[in-house]
Image (cartoon, rainbow, N blue to C red; front, side, top):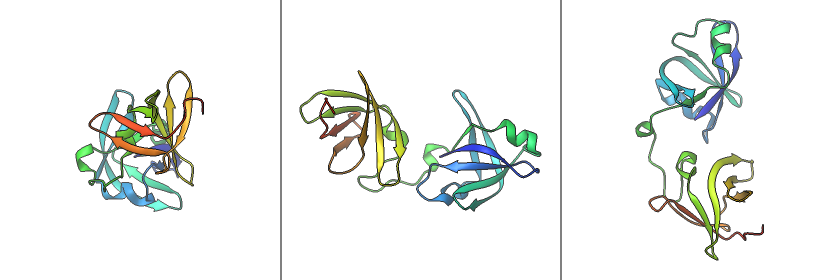
Length: 159
């Protein structure tokens, strides 16, 4: 749901770049999971607030600038069960990662490795025999079938 990018002040607060649609999306959760790779731990959120395009927070056990600096680069998340249900044709980015992308000709283009926010629209980063950047717009993405693990796209293999 976000990434810790820097300490904020001298009292252990951290700056978080949110990956949520709304800046304050993280503020609804009293505890976050902080970590990377296989190293995650639950941390109580003592205080948090939206601050321009970032979130700033004071986390339990993070009492000074050095402790906050040690968290730089760590991801911030919440348990999947705590997230609200998505509307029809809406997806969490984490649900898209790993899906196979196939074009209308039936050619496999690769798997979704990442999703980028560009401002105009989201973009799927698809890794196969080469990397492709495919706009996540209804004119290109024809179907997302989470159960089948597949995205159907109107996107040529030579694009």
